[in-house]
Length: 563
Image (cartoon, rainbow, N blue to C red):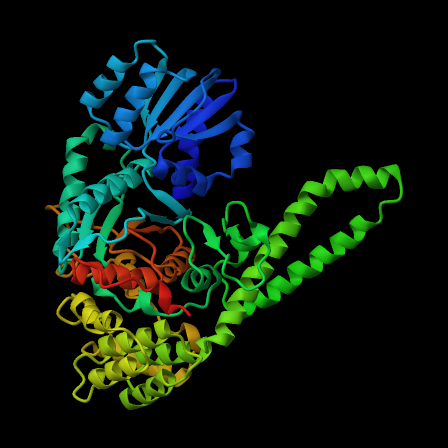
């Protein structure tokens, strides 16, 4: 189960089916992102695709010598624009692929518009999601909650995206869902209805053990998206933000023009692929090794004395240039992460966060938080983060001092709108909203594990936390996940341990959870797990999700707080 490979195979097939000759790839905003996540432009150019166009862009030239491969989401707007395109065709032939199921009526609309008989192919290729890592996908939906229910548009899009993942991976699963979440139940029902309605599409070769689709709700673990991160991919997203593999570095002091936006793709960057799950300390050493290797190669390249040397240099130049770009990109990224860690006292902040959520020493945690709230190096967003975590962790503690900490935030100049997030996160993911015992306060086994962990110490004080997802998947793979808490939809039940598991988190997942799935895949031979969510959160995007769920009108954005 590899979502990147699944999308790549669809795109390759589209290009192959159009045959030899020069081609244009016509996409919409969303399919442009879907394609760019798995293919570099240079790779597609090698397949005779010389032009990339958006269907919603005006003023495109007529080029009848080109074949047109259309890859579009099957929305009403796209069908209308495509019908208009066919009436006044700009290209010689059209090969049309929709990223999901298209209605017969829409196909009829397109057929009626094809007066010039330029359409050679209309097919459904189920690449209706963003593939981020081989085992991680997102639908890029921000704000799926409307109070404690679905936003109708988000429910429709999520159902489409999730069924497309199942079709692209060729899985017809048994469905389990988080019983404490009405939204999880509703999504499970919608997915099952789609599978029933389009039963012919889901007729795959039966396996001995059916795959499992497990639907969870972010509200059950509001802690994970609020923690600072220390592995490369997660850390870049937390401190700088990753948007469809792109990182905006334009605000970095002294940044050169060519590095103002960089692409982080494990498919096209070997260093990133090897280091995305490494912790920050290891990356520093690996960057130094990369630099040393580059310097050796650049010195050897300098000795151009004969025709043979020149020929060797020219042959190696593309690889040399690529390595130069890789080195400068990662040195810049790691340098900026280091600068932010030092400037904003992130080691102290993160250690306090980890102790807060992994241990139970209320008075020590409270004292550390109070100290950090008065530290001028700590950013406003990190001060808010600490108080929100404290409010969740000690929600029912008899001596909790949430009101005192919120008042300190007020004195630190944090606005009413942002202070309101402390109570908002309790409404969103507090004890009443959760189905799980997130902090193990009533579970003696969880308490003992945490106590022993505290005695032994951990390898890294900054990465003690394990997401709730880890224990849920661990129990599922061992056949021990409680059916009362995570029931099956319908009457069927799995007798054996599952082998193929697709986990979907309503309200968004995180790169920390993606790391956890990566580790579980490595540690459990014979089990394959893919993780997806409506979005991939860092703290900033998560609290925007909390805002829209608790109050339909968002309480103000948080961009200004990372100063």
